[in-house]
Length: 128
Image 1: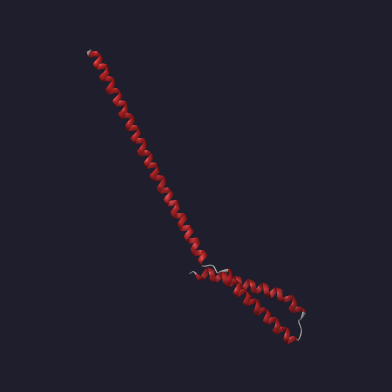
Image 2: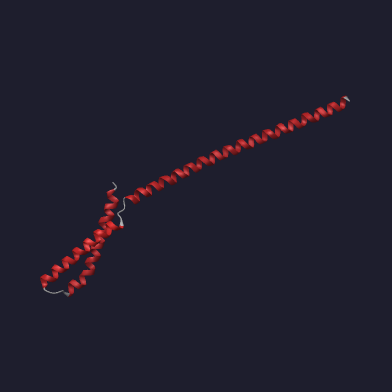
């Protein structure tokens, strides 16, 4: 009976050692998984912070743009001025000249370009 107790006791010790080894491996796996999650979470936080900074930059930039209504108001005013110049020119000559008819689209384009340039400068330099 003494040899049977030794065999059962040896088997118990062996199984307990296997269970401890398995528990240690499991603990190590969980620690490594937690460490990996911490690294991934940190990387994600950095990327999200970068995205938020970019979004803030876009919002700031967009807030400095002029609105369509502001542009149309100024552009309409310039078109009226061109029409007034044309009217005054027509009145001074007594008729509409062929030259004024040909120059009006060019003047309108130049006024439009000037308006756009002014608003771009206001937008770009206005935020500084």
